[in-house]
Image 1 (tube, one colour):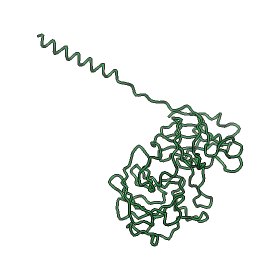
Image 2 (cartoon, rainbow, N blue to C red; image 1 turned 135 degrees about the vertical axis):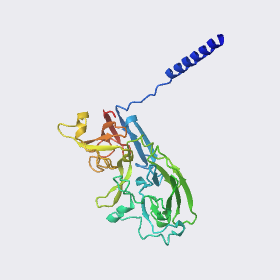
Image 3 (cartoon, one colour; image 1 turned 90 degrees about the vertical axis):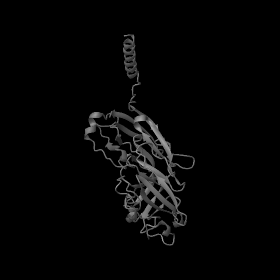
Image 4 (cartoon, rainbow, N blue to C red; image 1 turned 180 degrees about the vertical axis):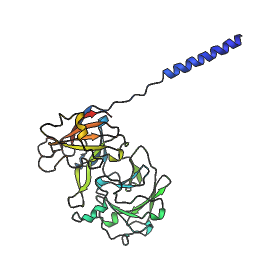
Amino acid sequence: MNKLNSMIAIAALAITFTACKKTTEEPIIVVPPSDGATLTLSGKTAESNYANIVFADLSTDKSTPVDRKSFNFGLTSDSRFKVVLNAAYQTTAVTTSKTDIATVTVADPGTTINLNHDITDASTATLVDNWDGDISKTAIPEISATDADNKVFLISFEGSKDKDKWFKVRITRNGTGYKVQYARLSETAIKTLDVAKSSDFNLVFVSLENSKTVTVEPKKTDWDFSWSYGTYNSGLGSPYWFQDYIATNNLAGVSAAEVVATSTLTYATFVESNISGLAFLNTRDAIGSKWRSTTGTGIKTDRFYVVKDGAGNIYKLRFVSMGVGSDGGERGKPVFEYKLVKKG
């Protein structure tokens, strides 16, 4: 009997301990999105007014600067196998007719196209990824599961416009990742870099100059847009590069709408009920260069933007200064303010 009582007591103690353990687990803390703030983006260094790409995350009031020349291209981490050129590095690329990278040389590059493009030639638009960020309109075709279909491509970037400084690159699939073969066009020794996808990020970035993968963008859920030097339409249908370009994180579902102020609708008066009438764009250039002019006044004070992040939070945003005209700002350090309009 005593043995039975002891067993019952032990069982009761175990149940009590288990119940107590369940009730003492730490709760999951959900950090609410920022109600709004004013941010200054640090794109400027002692060497240049546009040395960095700066990523901004409105819900956490954070900005992250990264050297714009730290990589040459990114490789998509989703189900696709796409190559995304570094638009902030004046990158151009063209596919050759060859699959054997060893046979691609300065004397026989496999193409007659000059990557040192002419801005007046609209056909040079094919040498860059489309500025709207549509992943189906990249300069390099998707990497095929059929190895023989993957041609060598040539890549040029700022400071490497002479042909012997171009890189020759061949990318193939390697399981769920990539195999990158590359060398300068004038070199015969071919290097190889295996690149694994990372589901936390839109892209995994490759630096050919440093022979490694590098971290550039924050995790795909941790930024809304970037400020940098970038590629856009020259107006002649060809690519043109300039600073103060805003690129939205469209690959992670961020969208934006432009609002031109009226006598009855301003940044100050814009509220949640005004959202329904907006046309949000899920493109890289949803904001682009529309917010400023590099001559005259600089900031276009007659407009503001509404940004919807990947979590559904909606912010109104307006630019305050950029160091052009009489806005009192500093070039390379744009300032903007934003306010939460609707929580996701």
